[in-house]
Image 1 (tube, rainbow, N blue to C red):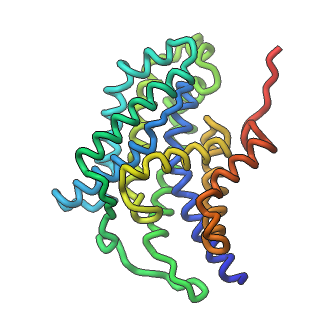
Image 2: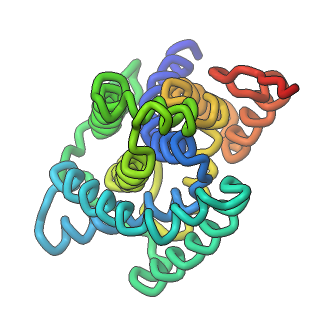
Length: 294
């Protein structure tokens, strides 16, 4: 029983690191622009579709193709920023307006996905990377999960280097703290916001390249589920907190891993249960602070 619990915890930690990667885009876009990106899951799926096309048509390994997917989606984000995001950010209630607008964009993306790829569930070939398994207390742990966990952690660390060590990252965190104060000290808020929206869209696509290797097949049907997982992760860790999203991902992954082993019938509701518990006990999130407006 102890070995089974340890195995579930290890698998859950690897899944949790992937969940943290899944939530980075949501927390960056909301933190900088106060925009709720409901298209997140659809972008993850489309990132997976692009990785699949690169593999099938050009024989490009999905791990090698990830930078290409990221760059393509960053460009897409920059193209969409001015016609969609700027009007929303200037509205009287950006958070609510973004919910409505991005819900519509999500429906459009889902329709395009169904027209282009149908309702088929796709999985990238595991043998392209490795089919090996690692025996852990007599139970098989796919080496591919270690690859995904390691790559996800590396991308998260690179994101933190960007956010906390680069000049653009300093400006980004200033905008996250207070847009008006950032503008008053000479930061080009529109330019930094556009760049971060592009990066956020790129970060949404990267988990799609790894999706079928650790969580499930690539399908339009999973876009809503992926959006919910990402929002559960960032709300647990505090919406807009990059450090919180890592902790939220680990908590969600371990909880799901342990539940799948010991109570699989409850695995589908573990995320909702975690979210409810956090909202009841600490509604501002694990890294948030309560504020009082006089």
